[in-house]
Length: 72
Picture 1: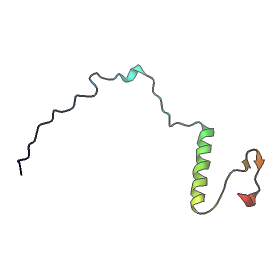
Picture 2 (picture 1 turned 30 degrees about the horizontal axis):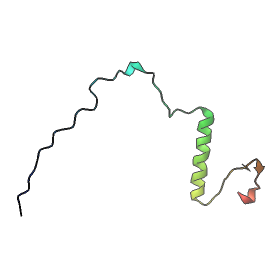
Picture 3 (picture 1 turned 180 degrees about the vertical axis):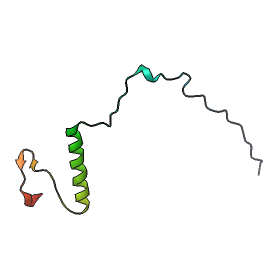
Picture 4 (picture 1 turned 120 degrees about the vertical axis):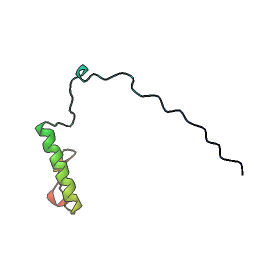
């Protein structure tokens, strides 16, 4: 069996060569929700938790038609 030949691999070049300026753009926090979005997210999480227990709290209206409670 011939001897194993190891060739050195050069390190990769640096990704960023210049410093980023944090003051160049305004701070954006996309995870901040307004109260209506927060309420909607809370309702979805509640429905998911209840679905794990086998309780369906689906929508009251599907395609504009009211769904009876027994079908939900």
